[in-house]
Image 1 (tube, rainbow, N blue to C red):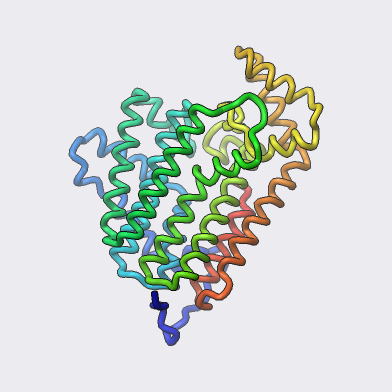
Image 2 (cartoon, rainbow, N blue to C red):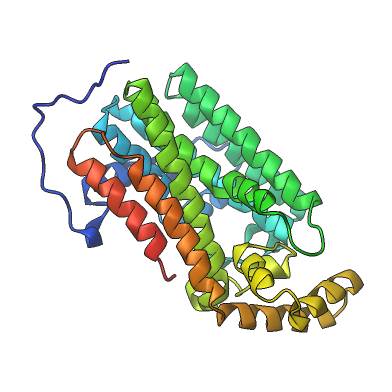
Length: 340
């Protein structure tokens, strides 16, 4: 494939780091309008749910990645918009399913759908949103992008099943952890970057580089999320602190804490309480959350995220030197520096 970015194209000033979405603000506004349009949803209660879930917002990082890539390798605007909408709707659908699996009551500070609807109805609402995302993907009219989307959906669903049925008491292996955060987060960042490169007819080498960028950015983003689960406040998170551990999901900070404190009585108490069940488990989780949050392992986990971000930034080397590439680099730096 040829590089579709004209070397003589005018170069706009690179936005300041605090305005990292400036280059794609108009695209993100169009995306918001597309996602919020539920006029074609045939069942009014479902239309209201889809609208509320979209309006609950989010950082829109995944579509921003897609739009920035398409400023490096331009694609037809409607196809670029369709890809961004597919990625963001798929992300939103996964959150609906995650909340059912985790029996979560809060998401971004608001009651989750499964606190209002039954679990089976909530799952079906998530399924509808998966279908809606697939329709957006089909609107790209690009076979390789549609296949990428389908493969990513398979990865995500496999990850959901693994999370539902494979929660051993104790520590997962490092590979199990990496596989989980790939399916949970990184796969969507990867498809946003790779899919946009495919739409923009980027050279094959650049497509591979941008997939590496998205994958490593997504891995780092999830590691930081796992850190914030121990260090942020409930107000910052919009959900209870230590939520993963309360659901039996062991993440990198706990794994590093166990390596540093192999004989920790707090962890022994947690594993025992998990096997036995009952109210003792809540106290055990609280103690571990507090200990991990104040431990040096938090900085160790952040160092691992920094290494992932370094790989993401390195993957941008050799791409056209335009403001959008600098914005992708800034986005990677931002992702590892988040404190909420």
